[in-house]
Length: 74
Image 1 (cartoon, rainbow, N blue to C red):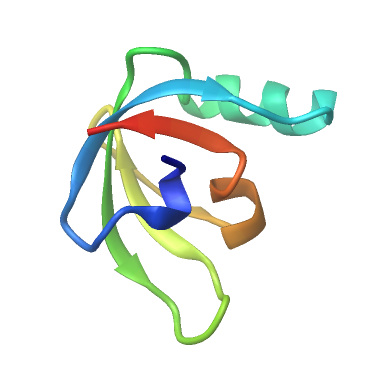
Image 2 (image 1 turned 135 degrees about the vertical axis):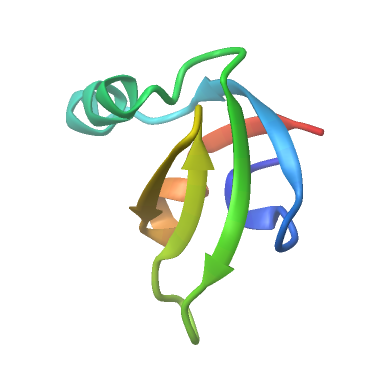
């Protein structure tokens, strides 16, 4: 399952960032999106806009296409 598939207010733990992009993997690491990190979807924009997620207590906006690369487990 990937982050973009979580329901609102659903919590999960990060398993991996599955991307060929070094930039995306590095950016995720800077945000604390790493294996084992808790993550919760708080809000979704209309359409395919960004989602708001709580990652280790901090709030971030994450693009849907980036969320699709973040593998999680519930």
